[in-house]
Every structure is written in C-alpha cells, then in structure tokens.
Image: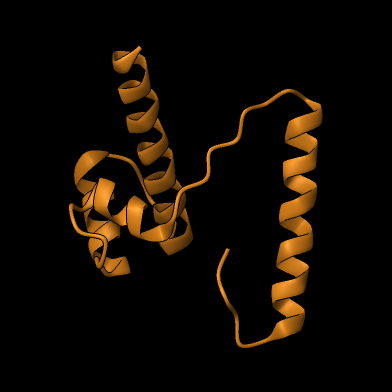
Length: 93
C-alpha cells in the first residue's frame, strides 16, 4: 500500500486490496506482503534502488524473459522476493 496524493484513488486501491485479501482468505490461500524497500533489497541488494535498477536486475535474473513494462518488473520482483522467503522458511524449519 502506498500514500497517494489523490485520496479517492487511495481509497479505491484500499477497497480493491481488501477484496483481493478476502477472496484469498476464503479460498484458504496464504498471502505474503512485502514492503517496497524489502523487495528492492531482496532483488537489487539495496532498499533504496530505483525502478530502473529493479527492472535491470529482473532482466539479469530472468534472461530471455520479455518484461512488458515497469509494473511487470515490479510484479516479478515481488514474486522473486516471495520465492526467496519461502525457501528461507523451509530451510529454517
């Protein structure tokens, strides 16, 4: 979640997020949530990375994958972060 300059947009985003979380909960799907700084740190190595750096690292980590834009790169970065956290949790028991 982020703070937007437009309160109406922020409210709509919060409502959409709530519906998505409710549907996942009803289906018994575990949801992982990660702060932007954590995603950047997991993928790039620093929490203050710029979007361009995240995009470049995703291209490096997933060679041959066509990334259709910054939102797709962000989604892939979150997926990679989640995969890393799942792997760490499994190793720790």
